[in-house]
Amino acid sequence: MDLGEPRIKMTGPRYESYRRVLAVLDELEAPELESDEREVLQDAAEGLLLTRDGEEHERDKILLDAWLVLSSLVRTGRWRYRAAEQMRRMLEACGPDRVPERVAALV
Image (tube, rainbow, N blue to C red; front, side):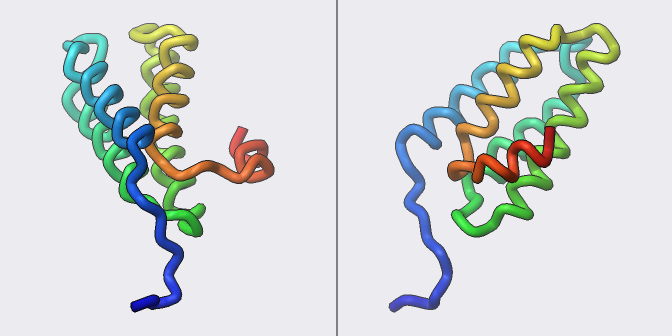
């Protein structure tokens, strides 16, 4: 039965990206990552994993919330920019592909 909603299968690479994010977050302890920051990033990974094609607004909101945490980590000197950028890419890999012009608008 087709309800007219865009569907996307949870792909192996997206699930592996999700598991990788969780594994990295599990290795980090305070002061590198506080529990509320960890929760935001874990929620972002899960939210992106469950996001479907056509839900660009939701995906962008999740990524913005995660980026705010990551930029705070860099600003406070707890993470280097390179580590935050790597986590951002790992999080993006949890979700459906992004439309290039929407990516440029976020940067």
